[in-house]
Image 1 (spheres, rainbow, N blue to C red):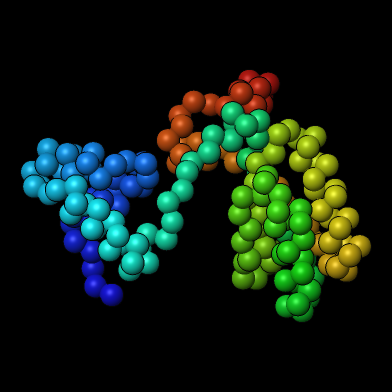
Image 2 (cartoon, one colour):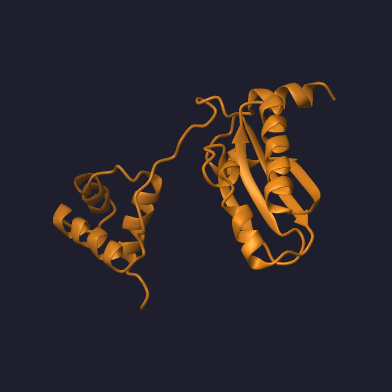
Length: 176
């Protein structure tokens, strides 16, 4: 599949910043930077990027803090070796697959076997979820978990363009 043109990279940049940006807005911005392009040309580039599979979908960025999910946690799960079918059944447990608090699920090489990235309303809600999840996979799937390492994510906000320290971090750091 060849390389992308400068125009295609710029269009991708605009869409990455804001996928709601109109073709007219993008063509206006491009004209300001010295690239004379019509909105139809921008629309064609976007369609072409979609057809090539470079743009897979248009999505939104949710402010989970406003929804009450203020506690981002990364969890590494170390477990005893199991066959692939058991592992697949565990990956489809509803508390992983269907829970809106679980944002990403990663299978990893070596130990730990998988990682979970999610956001919870509070430490108490997270502890409740964790207990139910561990009980479910041990009881229903005979899945032996050796270790459940949990990490509160501190600089997640910097990467998302948010530079204000969240309330829960202020409370933790001020008490030290």
